[in-house]
Amino acid sequence: MSVLIAGMAFASCSHDAVYDENYAEKEKVLTYEQAFIQKYGPISPTQDWDFTRSAASAGTRAGTGEAASVMQQIDLDTESFAWLWKYSDTQTGALPQATFNDPLWKYRTYIKQAIDAATAQPWDASKYDAVSFRVFTACLDKSLTTTSKLYYRFGMHVPNADGGINYWLAQATTKYTSYSTKGTDFMDHTRHLDFTKLPQGTFFYASALASNETDTKAITASDYAIQYYKEVVWKDSKGNSYTFWAFNCNKSEGDDLILWVEPTAKTPDVITKKRYMCEDLGGVASSDIDFNDIVFDLVDTNGNQKCYVRAMGGTLDIAIKVAGQEVFRKTTCQNPTFTQTTMYNTGWNGSIGVYSDINFEETLAEVEVSGWDPSTNNVSIVVYNPSAKPAETLIDFPVVGSVPKMVAVDVQRKWKEEKAGVPDFAWFRDFNRQ
Image (cartoon, rainbow, N blue to C red; front, side):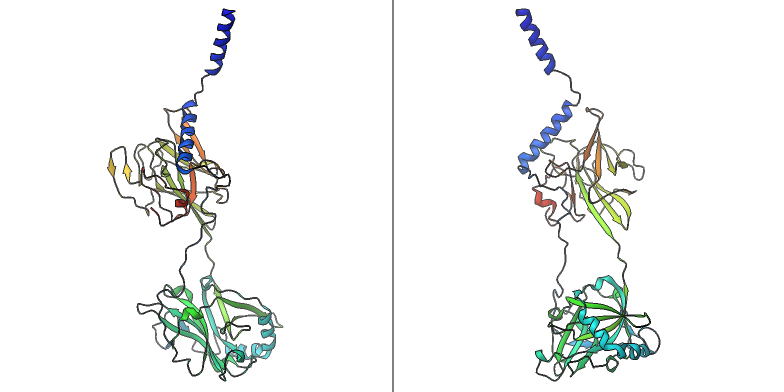
């Protein structure tokens, strides 16, 4: 019986003592996960580690720092305004006089019907490179005024040190409630506006002022800032297309000012950017949760993709994989070269004990990549540590609800300096916190 008991004890101990060469690495991962939860609390099962998915875009309000001023007419005979000029000949060039008279003015009733039926859309001047324009017609809204006529203006506010200048670009006035005011009475010369040359902070407005105050009343242009407009393409019986912009200057029902335009649409770059911040588990898990062991940006511009390495806070060899392909490795990079045990651009180099400032604009390495899918974050890092088992550790982008060793953030998010831990999850989305 003693022998049997001894044999059973030996068998039991032998079973529990099966050697696991990955035990140390598993213990380190477990310690990291425990430390992470202890520091940040339990993780919601719906926690998404791509903080770019719901990040709001930054923007500025039109009219910031603006001062009220009267509207000025631009002196088109000077060369002071490189962004606006007029055609010297009314019969040649864009939007000629003959075309205005026939077929456009002849068929103004049908054009008006097309405009009335159109749906207003948000005004976005950034989608245009340039536009040639002239007044087509205007219509009085007598329900909003006791005066016999109003001046309708399409204009722009140009900021300056004194609070800005209000310029009007197109103007019409009418005493009729129908579209019977002919635009050639106001703008027989076509103007051309180059959006690419406009001063920074310029915005557009559409106003309606009484005839006795149109040149003297100081306005705050942002009160009249264009929010919506209609862009309508009308075709004549021969299949020729003509484009119109319609503005509601009174902010009521109906369109007061209609321009005949020839816009040049901008072909914008389609750019997707993400910054990936990673932990390589190379340090002390309980204290090293700073997500700067490697920081890199992936940028897709019209399908052309690049990887920009921004920081390397670890002292182990590390590589970046995109769509399963290795695109960068610390120890094999040739231009420039890096030393495995040296930390780069994290504010502290532990191998030589030196502090240094972080340059958040610096690119340590730049490589072309392919196959990056921003929607799935098909990126990973590989940590090489010959003294560990296994010698290579693959870290994928974390699934929702797991403990992360990598996160995706907006490229405006600056990374932490070495040993300065991330304070909370909200930090990843807040660009203004250090």
